[in-house]
Image 1 (cartoon, rainbow, N blue to C red):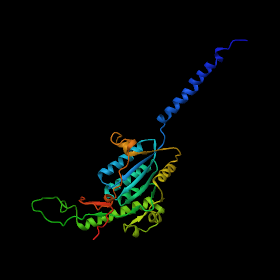
Image 2 (image 1 turned 135 degrees about the vertical axis):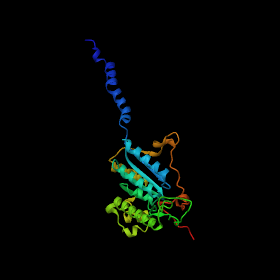
Image 3 (image 1 turned 45 degrees about the vertical axis):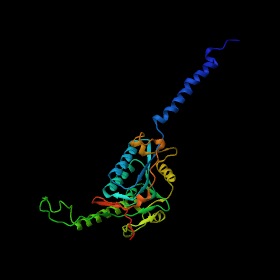
Image 4 (image 1 turned 30 degrees about the vertical axis):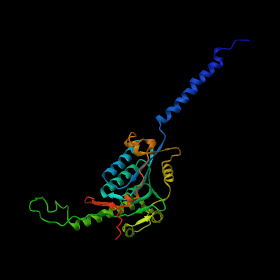
Length: 289
């Protein structure tokens, strides 16, 4: 009987299989997620009032989502009474910009009022809980004081020291209100089932009422909203990530221990004080007599 050829050695066959098939396959499985990252759904949390600082946090997270190719959709979880008109409009426009690249879905927890709903109106879809507070579509402003002459102060125009007349401020408020209404109508389109007259009363609605009026698209938990965002992005397998620690560093808010701040309902519903003059898309709850 002829001796076995080296090419027919079982050991050689096993080594060949190991180096030609198993090893490359293992390297490929290890490297694939690093070369082609798993698709992600980014969670962005809008909490409390909208002013310069919170607007910066919000827009930086959306910018990160647009620049990271692995993020395929964003879910904005909202608990906010609104805030500055200008910064609310900034968030609205930034959400519209992000929608050009990926689906953006809003999920209302406790409250999305005034400027917070303005922001949500730019999303592809809006969801809430049955008892969420939604709406307050309107504007508040602080009227300038009465015009007077100060003999020791020189100005190049009669309203330089005051910014304008009181009746002029009223007209500005009306323009801001109509801008808000038009943004809601543009965002909701045919889904809106409420007249301009009723909408401009700036009432707060429950999630159930908001669904009836077309201000939201459905009643869902946050997990269901995330799944809906994945569906809009065409994803079956995906990872859910909090955008805040990714953008602002894990050394201060490690991802493994990151938790959104608890909702302080007393602060959330409190009437703001010492606000600078200007226009605000901000929910104001009247004080009891």
